Length: 71
Image 1 (cartoon, rainbow, N blue to C red):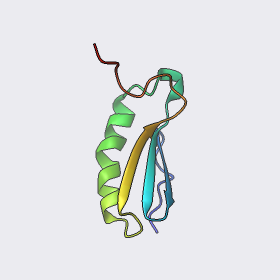
Image 2: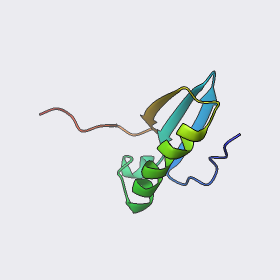
Image 3: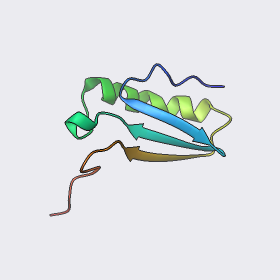
Image 4: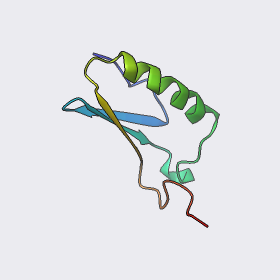
């Protein structure tokens, strides 16, 4: 079983072969900082190597926005 507890800016929950990856910096509207950038680079490698994961859902924690609004 892969351990995701070392991630500081991301949380990972797994259920039924689905990994839910949550950007977890709601106080900054989940803005990407250097730490989150590093973790976003690494999470895909860890998830690829996890035999308990077949699909990934990316979401954001408690922020008003997850992605920029269309103009």
